[in-house]
Length: 463
Picture 1: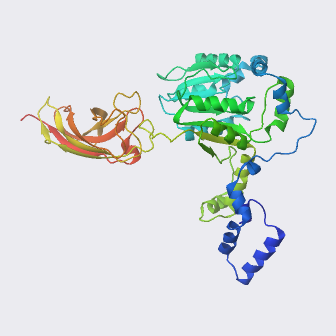
Picture 2 (picture 1 turned 90 degrees about the vertical axis):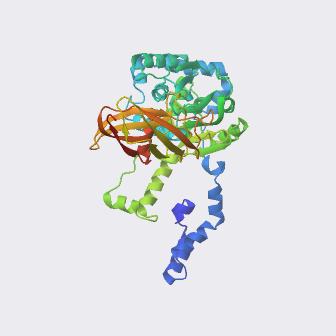
Picture 3 (picture 1 turned 180 degrees about the horizontal axis):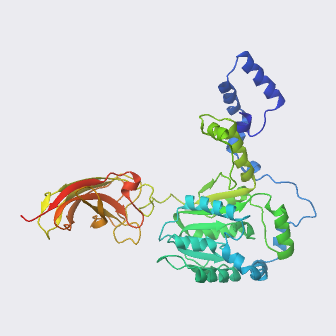
């Protein structure tokens, strides 16, 4: 209870007092937990704040002070140093091109943190995504592969050139938007106001010497409803051995990431939401008994051990998200939230060869996502028709499509019902079954999310 609620082992006095009461039967475990929750210590911990999240170890005079390093050079000199870093390591260009799978040491963490950012930002096809501090652009390539209009932005022109090589040597699969490469001068991002839907910043923000100015620029280019996701080190990053090595040998900025300062500057830049992700990129492995204990109701030893494991990881990492304005309603490019009810009535079960199958359908958007119109490159919603033989065997999953009328320019909003005229080409002579479902083109059939398919018999015969 002490570890979970107060984040520390029980002190001697508390341990003695509560143990005695439990043994005497004058208090239950629930009573003890309630008292801990009511304590000023728990209240202070619940509020959190920079005093806790930004606690730092003591600095010694022999260490490179990152703030002094920033003060000794101007922005142009620091930008040049960042570019020189890549130039000095061009002999390892294949290692750059192989990221994030260059080494087994860095790959798990890069992939896990990138996955957390993707899961939160949900960068959908057609979204304009700024990859700030893109480096050699491996993340830009993956954003482009997802169908985003990806913008690789970095202060180092050499890194962007490596990124161009990456796209030439390993182009994305399919017909996806080409990326844009944009050099950052350290001061202004060369994009219009409110022009991007999402911002990705992977292990780059701690390299900027002017974080407040950069956050102001990110806030400027992000559209209302957008989100920026960051994967960064923690409050003691500058004193780690690798950071000291980089600053001594390459004059690269290796800032500590202090969330109190980040949130202060982010609010001034127009952001109004801050969330941090709790997870660990290092798996917590247990045996079968511990796994069963973890799955059991309540908080047992296995759950406590897992919390400690995540806490150890989180102490040195800051994966956080800054939001601007009310989140935009998801749309049918995102499978999540796609649900519908569908009722179909055919004008008759028998049609003559060459004549269409006609009828009417009532469709209701019972999910949480906006349905885009049929003209959308990805995610346009329509009624999809499957063709089965009389025995129920699938003959053609994509037999026909029926467009939905658009109530307004945006599409079909959640809670909207539509009356749709059906006209479907008749199959060849014989007995068939038509299956009616909703489909988000390039995303999924609604049946995958649990919406029912309506199956009706049709006979194609003369007379």
